[in-house]
Image (cartoon, rainbow, N blue to C red; front, side, top):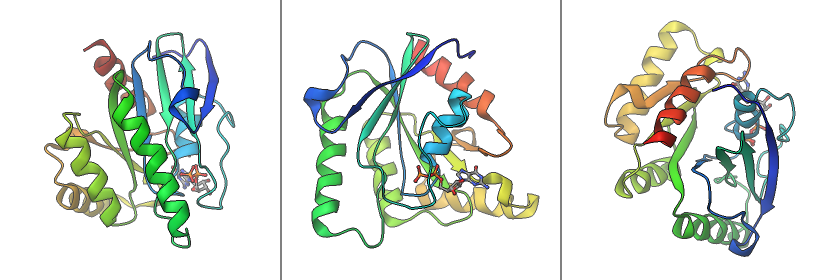
Length: 195
Ligand code: GDP
């Protein structure tokens, strides 16, 4: 898809702050530092519309990006920051559950995993939820540029097995550095939005 226009339409914590549910939305989730902000920028073809940082756990809000007045990408807060307090974890769960339970226009919830690492227990829990709720189960494996061809093969198999991904095409290795598969991901999202 060619991005003619995009904007950070809304930064929300509570349901009352969301934009109207008038466009198909593609939300993505993953643990802190998996590369969500970089993914947003790569998908939008912008250098820094979404803030990126080396410091995990900073993003606590839901960020709605409106694209071509046709769909939205929705960046959900990251999870699993090791030193997060119980209170912070509860706040994360409340924010994310409220979004997932109330958004009828959610076309797909995409799971981002770091291709170099085995999916975490929380990744597995999220992915099971995604399948149980009738979504296709698209997995974006980030930081693919950091792996050799051989390591990639192994990582692909590890992710597929750990998450129980129904079929291979649902796992898309991607890199914010080389922009590998950004066009493929847009094709997939376009198809899903039309569905
Ligand atoms: P977030 O916390 O999930 O939003 O993660 P960020 O987008 O801030 O990325 C965390 C770190 O990983 C930053 O240092 C990024 O530069 C780096 N990063 C993100 N995506 C990639 C990628 O595809 N390849 C490489 N090599 N580094 C990446």
